[in-house]
Amino acid sequence: MFPALRSAAYRRFWTGAFVSNVGSWMHQTALGWLVYALTESTFWLGVTTFVGMSPSLVFSLYGGVIADRTNRRRLLIGAQAVLMLSACSLGVLTAAHVVTLGQILALSLLSGIALAISTPVYQTVLHELVPPEHLMNAITLNSIQFNLARIVGPLGMGAVTPLVGIAGCFFANSLTFLAMIAAVSTLEIAAIGSSGSHSIWTDLRNGVRYAWRTRMIRIPLLLAAFLSLFGFPYIILLPAFARDILHLDAEQYGFLVAAPGAGAVVGGLGLAAFGDVRHKGVLAGVTALVFSITLICFAFSTDLPMAQIFLFLAGMNMVSAISTINTLLQLTAAARVRGRVMSMLSFALFGLAPIGSVHIGTWAHYVGTPRALAGGGVVCFLIAASFLAFARELRQPVAAPQAGGP
Image (cartoon, rainbow, N blue to C red):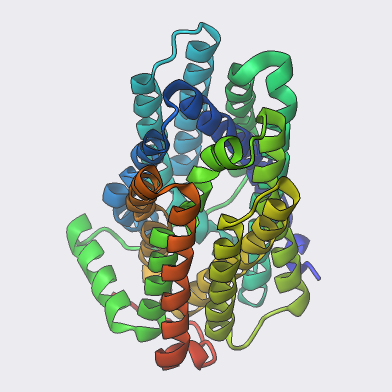
């Protein structure tokens, strides 16, 4: 069921990433609670997410060029060190009771820059740790660990906060980055990309042109972009939904945030059980459609169990859609531009997310949190249905990996 785990290098990478992501989800859950406690504003929840993810608008595409040109192991280690320093700094400020919204925004920006540059590198490394026939399994397992962390991290926040406060969550997160640094330090990561004979701008332009002209790459990227803009930002409104609609405390909020993570784990296990699905585009479109429906249903939840059920289903279909799109792109893209193509996926998922976070936070400010969530779900439903109906590429089997590229 998990052939990717036969690779010792992949096992080390998976374990380090899981430990690091547990800390990151604990951090993000605590951060949302802290920001809402300081501001009592869904608008500032959206702005905080925008600031943290806005570097992806500027740097994620360049991160793909870097992934095709540079020493990726050193870049990953450096990014983890920056993230560790940022989390520790926020812990110190919070523990000293001097933390301000401005400081939170500055540290979120610093972390966002590190993530924007390193995420495309992280994605391309997976392709080297396992043989091509196990790539979808490796990507699915990576989604499983990420979403296991979405369960453990928020639950950890709910357990840790009554004992050591919000600051303890930030300190715990800073320590977890050591696991990822240790794992990456052991990997042999080859320099397989561009020789650097062209400028970074030229390499970037060539990569974008290649992706736009290749419809089997362009269509899934556009689907991911629309989901990122209108569907996935639901996560930033969970603190407001928990306090104002469901009237939860911090511990119950942790259980709420863990629900989509649990669903995503089940979705990942389902993908692993099915194996290498032939019509990946159809699977991506259908799961995106179901995600949209469950998001609309969640918006009208009136108690914690009902909300958890719909968030569970949303998480299950969200991870299935994104994992399938990820695999489709990696198998379709030429080897020499794979880093740039994955940076475009990072841009779609993370670079556009700041825009999505601001507009959904603003919607919620004016029309209320439930209506903002439902509106995003309706837009995603219409987009996913249109792609399934009119994008014939999504209904075709994935082409074999190509050997060339700009």
